[in-house]
Length: 267
Image 1 (tube, one colour):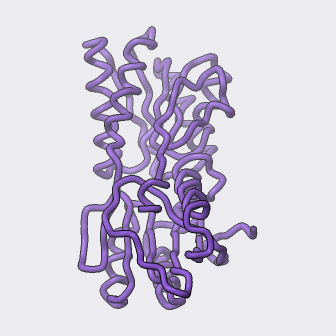
Image 2 (cartoon, one colour):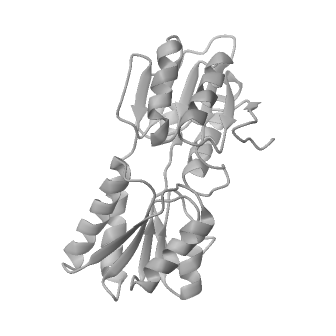
C-alpha cells in the first residue's frame, strides 16, 4: 500500500469506522461506494490520524469490496484542505470524511458546490443538508485522566500540552483539571499552547519545559508519543493521546483515551 501525502492519492478497497452515527448506512449497488478520508497528520502518528486509519481498516473488514476508499494524509487545515476535499469530490466520491476541526469551513464550502455528495466532518459544529458532524465525548476520558493525575501526582502539578484553543481542547483541559481537583483541591494544571497538532520535536520540548516548571505528570492534546518519551527519560508519568502509546514509553504511560472510530464509519 503506497503511503499517501496531500499531494498523492491512493485508492484501495476499504471502509469506514468512528463514534456517533449521523447518517444511515449506505445502500450498496453493483458499483462500490467511493469513500474519501482526509487526515490531518501521517497515518503513522500513533495518535489522532492513526486512530481514524484504524477505523477505516475496521470498515474494510466489514464491507469488503462493497466500498472503495481514498485516503489523503498530512493535509494542513486551511486552503490546502479545501483543495484536497474538492479534488475528492471531483473524482466522484460518494461520501467524504474530513477528520479535523479546522476542515469545517473548507468542507462546507465544497459541499455547497457538490450537493449530491455526502460529507461528514469530525468535531465540528456546523452542518448543511449534505454535511453531517460526528464526535465523541472526549471530555469524559479527560476527566478519568484527571482523576488518575490527582491521585498519582506528588507535586500536585500537571503539565498539559495543548494544540489550539478550540472547544474540544478547552473542554478537555477543564474536565481534566476539575476531576483532578476533586482528588486534590489545590491541584494545578499548567497549560502550554504549542499551536500544532503534530510536531514531535516541539511536543518533546513542551513536555520538558512543563517538567522544569514543576509538573510531575504530563497530559497532551497533540498526536505524537514524543512527550511520553520525554517523561520516560525523566522518570515521570504521562498520558497518551487518541490511542494506546504504551509501547513507546512503557514506564511513563499511565493510560490513554483510545478513539475507536470504526463503530461510526461502519454504521
